[in-house]
Every structure is written in C-alpha cells, then in structure tokens.
Image (cartoon, rainbow, N blue to C red; front, side, top):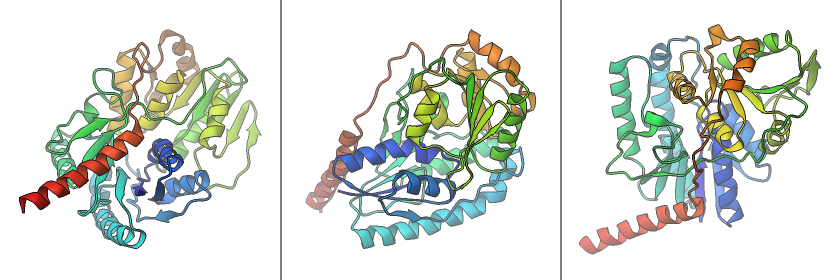
Length: 364
C-alpha cells in the first residue's frame, strides 16, 4: 500500500510522534511518502535519510505575542491559504504517486475525496482563553474533520488519557479511535551523568527565549545538566558551557540514550513531550509556552493529579522546581498503558473505505 503521510510543522512534536507510525508502516512493507515544512521537514529528512520527503506550504505561525487570540487572528488568513494550497498539492501527489491512503498529522488540508484518509490529532478542542473564539474554532475543527474518513487520537481512551477534555469533542458521524501512547523513546530513568536534561521545543521566538532562560538558570546551579535545543537544521556542534552540555539536535535514538542518564526532564508542555514522558517514566518540570493555552491546560491538569511540577515561564525558578520534583509522581503513574495496533488500524481504514464504495455501488 502507498501511504501519503503529511505532518504539521509546529515545533517538532508532530514529526516526533508520527515517526514511530511511519517506521512501523515501512517495516511492514508499505511505501510511505512523507511531507512537511520547516524544522519538521528537516527532522523527517534526517530521520528518514533514504526516503523522499516532500515540502508543503507552511502555516507560518509566529508567536510574536503572548496573547494567543491575537496570534491566531493575525495568522488565521495565512493558515487558511496554506490549507487550501496543501489540499491542491495533495490531489497532485495522490495522482502522481498512486497513493492508496492518507494519514495526516494535523494537516487539515491533506485529504482526498477519492481515497481513505485519517486525521491524527490530540486537539479536537482549542482553548484560547476567549470563550467565543473557542466556540468558533471548535466548530471550524468539526467541519475540517468531516473531510476525513477517521480521526486517530494518539492517547489512551478516557479515563486514563493524558489529553483530558482536549480530545473529548464529539466527531460524529466521523469515527474516532484512540491509538494509545505513541512514542519511539526506549529509555528509563537512571541516576546517571545529569541531574536533569532540558528538552527545548516549539515555534520561534518562544523556543529561543526558553532556551536562553533555561541555560542562564542552570549555569548558576550546582550539578551537571544537558540542554537539547531541538534545531534539526542547525549545523552547530555540541558544546560545553560551565556545567551544561548544549546539544543542537538529537535523533530519537540519541535522545533515548541521553535520557538514560537522568531521572528528571525539563520541558515545554507540548503534548508529544508529555506522551514521551508517560512512556519513559521520567519526572517532569513543565513550563508551557506563554500564551499557548493547550499547554497550560495540560500542565495544570497533570499538576493537579500530582504528575508534574508546573511553572509558568515568568515564575520559573529551576532550583526550587528541582527540589519540588521529590513530591510528585510520574505522568500516567498507576495507569495501564494501552496500545492500538497501528497496522490493524491502517487495514481497518483502507478496508472500511472499500466497503463504503461497494455499498454505494450496490445502492446505485
């Protein structure tokens, strides 16, 4: 089967969570054609060096303001334009490459009326801090979901899910399925070389601001630390600054090896990172991207469950946060991790669409 697998570029989270699925489909003998833009495109090309990875138009979200509604309104027209362009490109790609099936990680324009398609998303509801805007965006998401055959949620089904209310929106008549925790990391917490490892991610300029803040605070503390900057397109070398090892980028395999040398991870509140930590069992200090209410909601929810240390960026004190780690559990502790067979899910998607075509043909 030939699969078109477009991935959203919004930090590296979407590419990170899609890679395990992409690699499993390839190992099962399916041909996978990936596509993205920006840093996510660079990551996919580095992780899949022998595969063709196409470039799609970017949504060009730039967090110039901490006020999320302003960012969304400012870039909304550009996002819609990009979605229209990627939809037209999808039709060309399907025809040119003989695509049988589409699995789109949060790229709402990457669907095709003639073939089965699944939308991977954990965010069926959007929180902006403005109720009227939330209602409008949720309605828009519902309308976009109707273009797909199925909705796939990379999370466990309630009540043990990480996403909480984010994935709770009713998508009927489009069915939704929970894939379970999706992560390629294979590490476990160990008292190794580092007191903590910071994994930096997200869109600019928030990513760089967080990197500078973390390095400044860690350099004034006792102990050894590592900072992974999340810049796959950067050619900089690993460098040492005082007590910190600064690493531009690590593959998922390399990141697993690094996290084997610590018990604590400092990160943004991006959903893929939280899903990784739920699998590995590392304790987490979570500092959401300012103004990104999805991350704030997730961090606050997990903190109330006693599963992470949650700090806003303006109040971040890593010295105190590291002390508070002793009082928390790990993300998803005491819940049984469940996993959907992604190969079986793919076959269900393809076969379900074929059955629909048969029913339509008989009815006509």
